Length: 211
Image 1: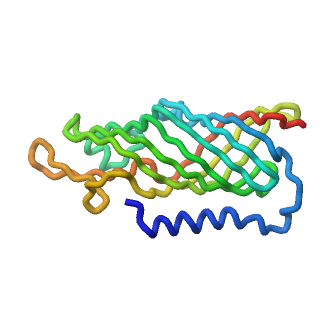
Image 2: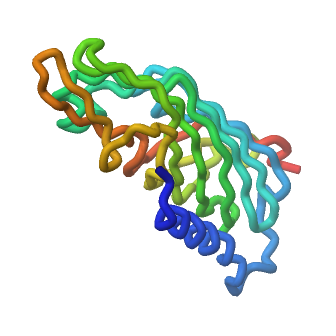
Image 3: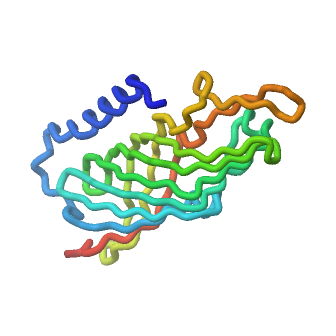
């Protein structure tokens, strides 16, 4: 369930991100303004088996993005002890959402991203199966490096923390999924599988970078 507390956190972080426009250098003209950038994150294909595509548009001070990932497998190396004990198989068929932020310099910006994740879970070898959507918000910092002065190709590094805003499961008990296994023992599963700290590196291309 998305609580009022989570809504307030969401609102405060979004206002904080947008209010950065009051800095002393806000009238400075930044490079790469009014440019479109396409990117693909590397963490997903290397560690989760899927892939991600994102598009970013920059004005002189603001940045707007949209990201979409598919076929992400949350393997054992990225599971907590509770998930491992339940022999959880966790797959995100898709994850998608927009973001907005403020540019501190030509290469550095801070954003708040919002995501909807489609989640499929198998617990204890089929004893419990779940399909639901999870909602997250991720404030973060982004920095771009270009490969040269005469190319639009580069990389973008990012550091974010994803806050869990809830899900569409209507049978939770204390925000957890409860079920009985074949031995009659009550098992508990936390459906928040996409929240937490994250870092990434994306390959990017900025159109008209040298114009």
